[in-house]
Image (cartoon, rainbow, N blue to C red; front, side):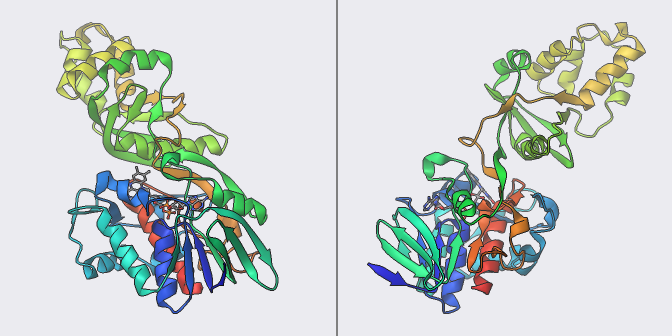
Amino acid sequence: FNQSVDVIVIGAGAAGMMCAAQAGQRGRRVVLVDHAEKRAEKIRISGGGRCNFTNLNVSAANFLSSNPHFCRSALARYTPQDFIALVQRHGIRYHEKTLGQLFCDESSAQIIEMLERECADGQVHWAQPARVLDVAHEAAAGYRVRTDRGEFDAPSLVIATGGLSIPKIGATDFGYRIAHQFDIPVVTPRPALVPLTLDRATLDALAPLAGVAFTVEARCGDGRFREQALVTHKGLSGPAILQISSYWQAACAAGHPEPVVLDLFAGDDADAWLDAHANSNALPGNLLAERLPRRFARAWAQLQGAERALAQMSERERQALAQALSHWALTPSGTQGFAKAEVTLGGVDTRALSSKTMAATARPGLYFIGEVVDVTGHLGGYNFQWAWASGHAAAQAL
Ligand code: FAD
């Protein structure tokens, strides 16, 4: 069959459902198309099943993009407080876990059900599962989307198909392909918020410690995060590493790769601490166990070749050890890729979009929202806030 509507939204995830619901509630006839069998799987698995749906402290500084200012307008017009009000209206109980991160008390399924109810209020028509066969633009009919469940045409088409992370639950490069089809540039997508892999020598020293966690300040480029790091069988993970992986990827993408620097004293003065222990006959690995998990302290000291008691070290050697503790520079061998990445860095180039409406400036009626756009949030509810805010921005313009 063939159906004419006002808006076709492709991708019924976080951004697509938010946009469809709001456009529908503004009186637009909306069809929401998605190829997945199950609805919004990424919301379902998010936040360990409890969905970290926003963060109390959101600003442009929490996002990476080739244009760091692009996200400001949408974020200012749909704030965490707006989303919290929605959650409260639907009677969903939530709590702050840490660092402003808000999670459902019960289950991420409640966020999906809330968005479904919002879509129902907007009389959104669902086409899911529906495989998109092709998309065309004709002057008379506007955008025409051919699917295995029929054809839809509309003056407005919203692409909300997300990024490439976790292909096994339905992530595809569809949004980037549509961008190419309509001559809209795409900043090369890379896995972000992703565990890092390490070179063989470092891995040989650390891998036996898989599971050990420690607090660090991780630094790379403009990124700086004081959180937990975790040793894995392939390298490093944990919130500090996931956060800094996005900055490491951004530096690589910009053509000036930088090491990831870990401060094992997390901002404390390693120099002063070692000075205070200058007369100790303990081996550095044993002494450092006061500050770091014992097995990790020993393996790290061994990796640094620091195997003489502090009292036997020259001042220069001690200073070098202090420097290594506060500036442990690691050059990752890579990442664990899109299979393990929480988000995608890069995407539809913001220079081709209006920051107010998310519309492609050279393609009237074509919009890109959510993770498919080159706006990538930190860990902590920021990626969903971008999905809600960009979905809202487009919906106001449709
Ligand atoms: P998505 O929610 O990914 O939705 C895209 C939709 O498009 C999907 O339904 C998909 O089926 C559909 N689609 C894709 N290709 C096609 C196609 N070819 N045809 C038709 N439909 C298609 N962010 C947070 O803020 N807080 C968290 O707690 C959090 N936890 C996460 C945990 C994990 C394990 C992962 C992987 C991510 C997490 N994120 C979290 C990131 C967050 O899930 C995404 O940034 C967010 O879902 C992006 O929203 P979106 O609507 O742009 O894309």
